[in-house]
Amino acid sequence: MRRGMPLPDGNHGEHLALRRASSSTERLGCIEVVCGSMFSGKTEELLRRVKRARLARHRVVLFKPRIDNRYDDVKVVSHEGIKAEATAIASAAEIFSFVNLESAPEVVGIDEAQFFDDAVVDAAETLANAGVRVICAGLDQDYRGKPFGPMPALMSVAEYVTKLQAVCSRCGAAACRSQRLVGMEGQLFVGGAADYEPRCRRCFVAGVVDVAGAPPSRA
Image (cartoon, rainbow, N blue to C red; front, top):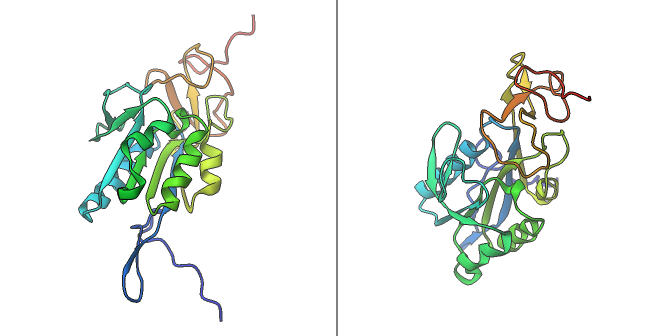
């Protein structure tokens, strides 16, 4: 009878990146992706996993995109105010200015991964292949309901994917989309509660809407 693959530790699509071999402890690299809409708790879940890793005495390096300075320039901060020190970088290539693969940390966390270029996928793969547990958090869809940046590729190469849902601001159902409330075009618009709200499939309007929930004028 074939033995199945071991289940990840815990119930949140995560593991501790260590496996006991017969005579030694072997580091197992992997990629974990935490995704969902705005206000679904992605960053909070990332920071929860980072905290657990530190409690396990693992070395952790946390990165955030420099473009995201909504709450702090050098900290990862959730919408609920939970925070942790991080390194702000402009591109995925900068990760290797702070991480030496010869003495890599056990865990690398990447917040708001959707804002990075496609090179973040190769960076995550390189780290995982070197025995690092890589935890990426980010939006899987943009304000149009379309795949966001490198997130689909990260999800496809990840061992573990956790998709979180928020609460629809209109009807209270499970929300999986992010409704933009201001007239800004383009994916890379960083905003908060005044600029976005979570919506379910039924209440979501592809494109920009006003705060009252009306579709944009076509005049």
